[in-house]
Amino acid sequence: MNHNYFTSQDVARLESQAKVLREDILTMIHAAGAGHPGGSLSAVEMVTALYFHVLNIDPQNPQWPDRDRFILSKGHACPVLYAALARRGYFDPALLTTLRQYGSILQGHPDMKRTPGVDMTSGSLGNGLAAGVGMALSGRLHHQDYMTYVLIGDGELQEGMVWEAAMAAGHHDLKNLIAIVDCNGVQINGWVNDIMTVEPIADKWRAFGWKVVGCDGHDMKDVMTALHTARSMRHPAVILMRTVKGKGVSFMEDESKWHGAAPDEEELAQAIHDVQTWGVI
Amino acid sequence: MAKTLATRIAFGKELIRLGADHDFVVCNADTKACGLQDFGKYYPERTFSFGIAEQDMTTAAAGLAACGNKVFLSTFAVFATMRACEQVRTFVCYPKLNVTVIGTHGGLQVGSDGATHAAIEDVAIMRSFPNMTIVEPADAVAAVAVARWAVTYEGPLYIRLHRNPVPDVYDESYSFSFGKARCAANYGRDLTIISSGILLRKALEAAALLRERGLAIRVLDMATIKPLDKEAVIAAAKETGAILTLEDHTVMGGLGSAVAETVVQHCPVPMELVGIPDVFGESGDAEELYKAHRMDTDSIVERSLALIGRKGN
Image 1 (cartoon, rainbow over the protein chains, first blue to last red):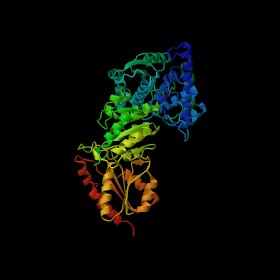
Image 2 (cartoon, chains in turn yellow, blue):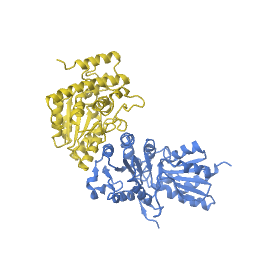
Image 3 (cartoon, rainbow over the protein chains, first blue to last red):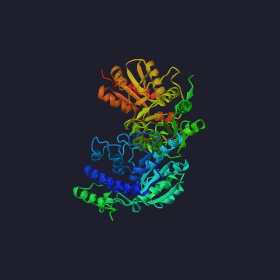
Image 4 (cartoon, rainbow over the protein chains, first blue to last red):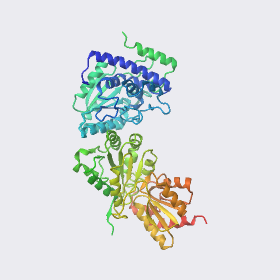
């Protein structure tokens, strides 16, 4: 497969896949009675584009040494990753509703030793990019041509370690590393820039030696184009994707209270209805 | 006269030698910790500089290990275990990745740098992490042997090394036995001294002095602090009836605590924990500091005599 090339049919296929992931996210968080819907929903298009078109991966061989890597640095958004992995064939989608249960392969935050397809344990914010730096260095050392993608939250940019890793990626000129910032603007207690300003985000990344690409994180064609552009930069590249927290569910959009809360039965029904009818013109 | 070399330098030099035959990588954070800043002169592709950024280095080491590399990272023990504490816990120990953390300048041997640089809590912190293994060699001979073993070890590993040159205790016949206490002296059944790291020499000196007074001491070199050789500890408790532990580390949570946890559950006997009390390090010569904390040879003798006096019957 040419992972850069895509057609309008691909976009339509991915949009319809994204819808499935949204339903999965809501269903599994409801079943678990806990989890983080807001930041999972904002990243759906990107994760769908990666897992269902861009990433060079083999679900039958999750440890394939030459696979592309994906690190969900904002590990609390793991429902979107679990849904993608299940629907891509890494494990039975029936397991999604075991999220957060004792003995489940689906821990509350990603665990590389328990979940097939999870490339890096995460959940403690600020660490994913550094892990990505290590993976990109390894790829270069062993002359492998895989890419490493790291999805970071915009609130997560408040963690100083993100910038240690950004500095290292710039210093080592890791052209096989792509960071993606999910700029949904909301963190647990409100708007990101009320709690601790992270702007100007693009200038910060540029100052650390990165190429910056922007996109609308809910426009599949734009997301696919941004990934293609980032891959062709030949330098560490960051995609700043503008998103809406809780995207696709009317009562969750832009609401910090849905950062980490589970919908009840009634809310789930409304949410599923919203997801199914969203985008239908 | 035994040769004199710091464990950190012996370990680092051996690792550079081993680099020729073993395919590991090295991560540095701009310190002169154990000589590994020179690894890149010999193996430029397999060394990675992270600047003064220990957290980034540690999680990046985890990323390298997640791709199948054996990784050694080195910095001062204070930074490796405290600045990058959570990175070691969550990204090395939890996923059980093949990263060896080399912590140098353990204990009070930080020249006169003082409390900020004296790692007196590192063992306690590392010991509390599941999947972590801790090894602290007693001299340069042991450090070389540990380096040779470490390159073949798989999983999270913490190597604790000291700053100052110390006279060798061991000769070429030494071989490192992972997970096993080494009986460094066995004069009899009055008391066992269990030490880790370079304080072994003081333990042996104290045992010799006590022998002159007619007391028969067993000395165990507990180079592997975790997993602890419980059998050796229980045997020491049963056969000698009292245990004195000796560590260049706070007495809260380190070797002494590990030994006490075993003793109290399997064979309670009187114990004396010799180490740094509940205080920070400070500037000064290491020997002066040891004396101030009653960790010098004469104090070990005194404390041993008092401990033997506490034994039943």
